[in-house]
Length: 172
Image 1: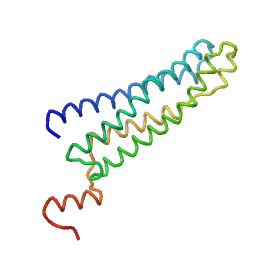
Image 2: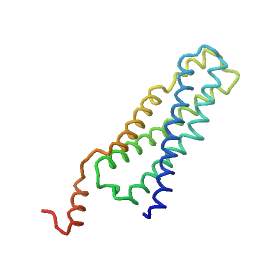
Image 3: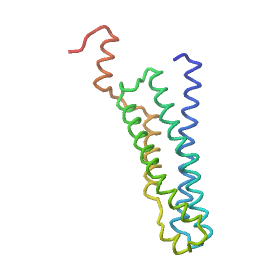
Image 4: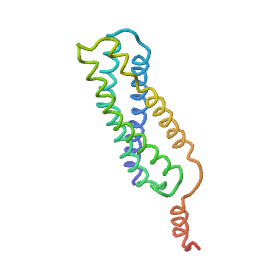
């Protein structure tokens, strides 16, 4: 990738990745309200807000992060399968995005119950929360972020073979 294009791609990837973390933090704040509030209106707002943030923002940022991450790895010396940290980052990002997409059905169901004015505060408190997913997701995203900054050493078997080919030697 040419330097100018690489910088644009990197800026796009950083923007959507950090945006995903920020949106997940906003979702977590709403999830804490859903888990702790006794106020019926706050519960309704939290569940409806969680659905809006997850469905309209977080899913899009997750998909964009996955796609821009693939573009970055294919367009740079790191490659998609050359280094363990890239492979692990890709796997964790795909895992987090998949869990998120699956969890959006639960979130939408909770929001639908909260939006129905015939449901009482007790009904809303009985919905539970998604704190395990919220906290787990943020931990995974921060782990990915740290790994992408630190870039731990270690070539995959494929990366080792590629390196040997580039040096003009065939691996044993």
